[in-house]
Length: 40
Image (cartoon, rainbow, N blue to C red; front, side, top):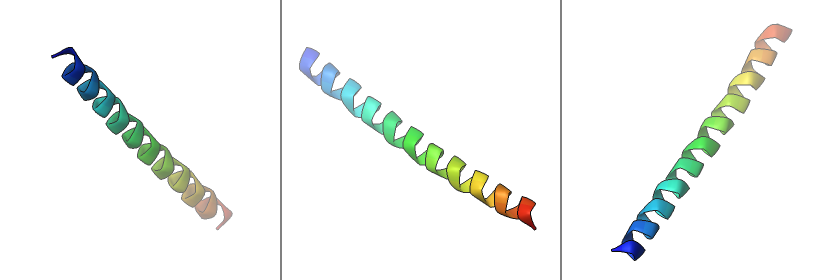
């Protein structure tokens, strides 16, 4: 039981890390688009 709990926690942490990385990528792209719009 404990092993499965640990693996589940690691999977959830990995998913959260991927989600945070994806959101950070979107934020960087979004900020770049905003800077491009400001130039115009």
